[in-house]
Length: 113
Length: 118
Image (cartoon, each protein chain N blue to C red):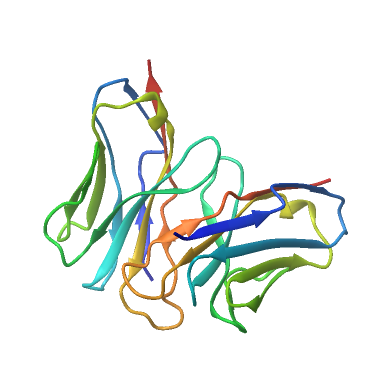
């Protein structure tokens, strides 16, 4: 069966510090991968998605970036965090074939102080 | 572009009763997929149910069922025999069946917060 891992689970970082969130999927090959952000009590905002190594689509222009160094690894980064980067970050994966449902990781709660 | 609308920000239901959450969507496509996700206080997103647009039969998963009205572009979720563990944020989502780069994503509604009253 497939599993998706995210770490860290919780992170507190000062403004201006770098960020690296990691997401890894097990038990499947060639998944589509997604990064979402969710503010408290709000909906999901798609940040990036990837259909393969080196193929990253950015949905929201900001100081975040994403990379996919391996087939089942997706990394969300920032060189300098802003207060507005605080939130709950969710990674998800889906098969490339239908029906395309996405499966989510447990999330990372990021607080920028 | 497709849009998904959940017009009920909050709903409440007595335990053991039935509740229906509304979702409408806008698309010009004929083939697509619709989903309901549940996000409990742990904030883990859990897939509840899926509906393929080409299927006329409404999907059912135990106490969860949908009322899919393709012509009306409506996709409501019915929860029967509500339980305390059903308390969560529920999100409706749309996915195109066209697998071009740029369509490889879900469009989510803004969510409905469901409270279960003991």
